[in-house]
Amino acid sequence: MKLVSPGEAAANTNDIPTEAGEEFARIGEMAKKYGVTLRTLRFYEDKGLLNPHRDGSTRLYTRRDKAQLKLILLGRKVGFSLRDVKQMMDLYDPTGTNTKQLRLALDKSEKQLARLQKQRALIDDAINELSTSMTAVRQMLVERTAAPQASAAG
Amino acid sequence: MKLVSPGEAAANTNDIPTEAGEEFARIGEMAKKYGVTLRTLRFYEDKGLLNPHRDGSTRLYTRRDKAQLKLILLGRKVGFSLRDVKQMMDLYDPTGTNTKQLRLALDKSEKQLARLQKQRALIDDAINELSTSMTAVRQMLVERTAAPQASAAG
DNA sequence: TATAGAATTGACGTAAACGTAAAAGGTGCG
DNA sequence: CGCACCTTTTACGTTTACGTCAATTCTATA
Image (cartoon, rainbow over all chains, first blue to last red; front, side, top):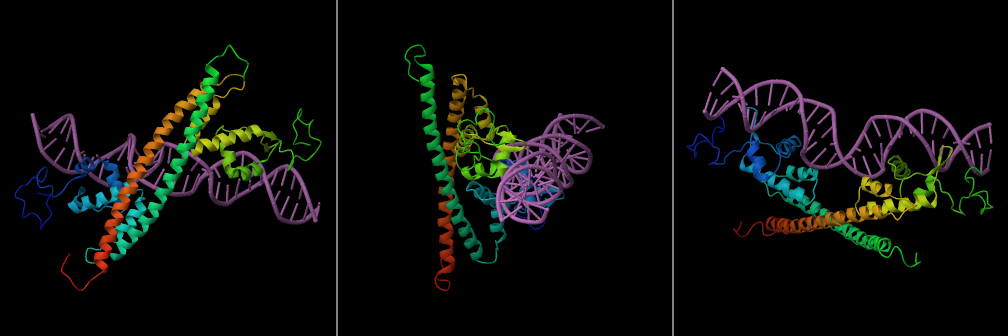
């Protein structure tokens, strides 16, 4: 019974929320479900990005926590730092229109997009330079491998 | 006179190698010429990537050191770690064909090329996801900004 | 000779996102 | 009852390529 917080036990006649209702998840389930480690979840919490409930000392994650984690992972995927993600999440206000939050997100996104495009350009450069030098190296190998006994060229 | 090593002073009647002969460069000149910091040059040396001569305690870089630095910078540009660069440079043998070195370089280059292409794919993914969510955010902002008094859509 | 401008070594600091013990508490099950 | 498994907190370790003092020395020039 300890896994059900007071005031939310009504709709669930099952005493064991595991497997069925999915009302709460413990850290292990969360980790598997989202492909992260326990350490990562605790780390995110330590950084203020997640705030799961507690049953004693055990963390309990609700669907709200899951949504937050999804956002964090999306942020990470597009290259935001956890700091950026936190800045944006901290502006969330369930009672308002969140205009400020959205504007900040958009602003940061534009900058991040620019960074990504710059990175892509750098990588393209690198690919080109690398390909070029690979060709040169191959050529040198050919010169050193083929016809080592005849010809005086070199 | 201390800047000219014994056995190489013949062709240069000028006692001051600065500006003209470019036979040797000190760390400051090197840094400017290649756009790196003094710290970087010392760091590379500390890692065994450079081995400039010394006049007492002052580092003197020859054209050979310059060529090496160019290689290091090229390696870095295409994404090799300094460790990789060192591995490859360590195989250099002025008396042989350097086949081993070239093969290692080619091998590492192929792997690095693959990594770069994977990175580019990830970045493209990120760009797409980011663009998509930016569109969504813009849409949300429009809904919150325009027509806040009329319509019941929401 | 005074002073500014290089150069030297040594060593701690930084950033990001966790990894990896370590030591211990809680829990269900056979 | 005992063992296995999950979870907890604390805290140092990892990686890479330098940055940033600090204290000192060397050198050139006016």
